[in-house]
Every structure is written in structure tokens, then in C-alpha cells.
Length: 291
Image 1: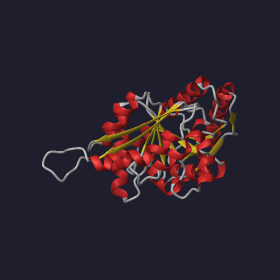
Image 2 (image 1 turned 180 degrees about the vertical axis):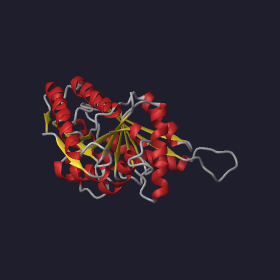
Image 3 (image 1 turned 120 degrees about the horizontal axis):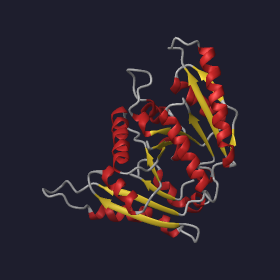
């Protein structure tokens, strides 16, 4: 499904642990992995300059990725200097032709989480590459055995929140394209979930019935992918709450949504759906760029 990963780490997000699981990531069909770390310029002098000590420390921390490389996967370590991580991420994605960027969310406070959303949007504006977001609290607490298995099943089952909008149809098409072009077929199962709210004139029961009919057509359309598609699920209530509940019960590897939802308000005038999903979900989130 993805072949060239760009794994970004600030050494606080837990993503640097993945240097020890290169072969497990390769089991999903990954052919190239790049680890990226950006060292801020040394602020102790008037003219910004690279912090050579921290650059060397970063290279040593990421060296195991190169040591663990085998014939299955090509591995790069890229340690850069700069004060604009989003620029470095976009440049690295272009340099290595990455088709998935892996980021960790901040773990400090709500402000840094909001800044993270801005960083993700900035990356999307510079390079149209899907972003997978991993929770540091989750990655950091896995044992090595657990993390190895998690890496092997990173894309095994995806939950797709669907509402028949142009945005949700867009990433359905992107997933179809990627699965069709994938040789290794790491994706084994899809779970479609539609959350119907009660804020419209049309009765909830009627809208739920329509949702089932549309989801069944989507399931038929996905049948050609040779991927198991769960029976359509339609829920009622708050979209965010219900999607998080569906993810827990459906035994999924990650939740898929779109970068367009980073600005889409659900419900108005509340925070965006994707931004809240990033903040509240313990599951990995895959953000597809709008096309």
C-alpha cells in the first residue's frame, strides 16, 4: 500500500524506536525507509549556526536503522539543521520520493497539539503525501515484541469514516488506487462507518437506511480489491465519539481521514473533526491529502 516511508522524530515522540524494527516494517511491503530528525540552530550565538554536537548525537541515535537494513529494504538517515521542521519534512519527502510521512503528536499541552495541526497542514501545502500520526504514549509503552508485531500490521485493517461527501469519496478512491498498485497487499480488511446525527429535518431512521444503501454500494465497489470489507456500520450520535467507539470495537490498525477535515467543523462552531481525532484517538491516524 505504501513503499517509501519518511519517519520523522524529535526523540520525544517515540518514533525513533522504529530504527530497531526495519525488517518488521519491510514485511508490509515497504521498500525504502528514511529517518528524519531536525536539530534547531544553536541559539547561543548571534548568527544561527548548526549545533554540531546535537547533530552527531542524533546520527548516533538513528544509526541502528542503517545497521538493521537488509536486502529487503533501503534505509536512509537524514539529520538536518533548521528552525522550520515542516520545511525540512517537505524537502525530505520530495528528495526521497516518500509516499507516506510518519509523525508523532506533541505530548505537552493543547497549544502544542494545535501547533502540530498547523505543521501537518503546512506539510500538506508543500507536498501532497499522506501523513500517518502515531501517539507517543502508545509507541513508548510497547515492549519490543509488541512493537514488532504492530509494525508488521501497521496497515492491516483500516477504519474509514464515510459520509458520502466529496472528501470521503476522495480517500476511498486513493485507497483503491494504492491497493490495486500494491504487490505485497498488506491491507487485509476495511471497516466503513457512517455516523448519522439528529440535527436535520429528515428522520434519523430514514437517513440511516439511506446510509446503509450507499455503504453497501461502496462495499460492492471495493470487492475487486481482494480485501475483506466488514458489513456496513451505521451509528447515531456525535461523529467523533462514535468513530472512536467504532475503532475500539472493530479491531482496526488505523483510522483514515482527510486533510480537508483539519478545517472542517464538526459540529459547528467546534474544533475540526480531524484535529479532534488527532487529539483524542489512541489509534494511528492516516490523513490523506485532498485531490
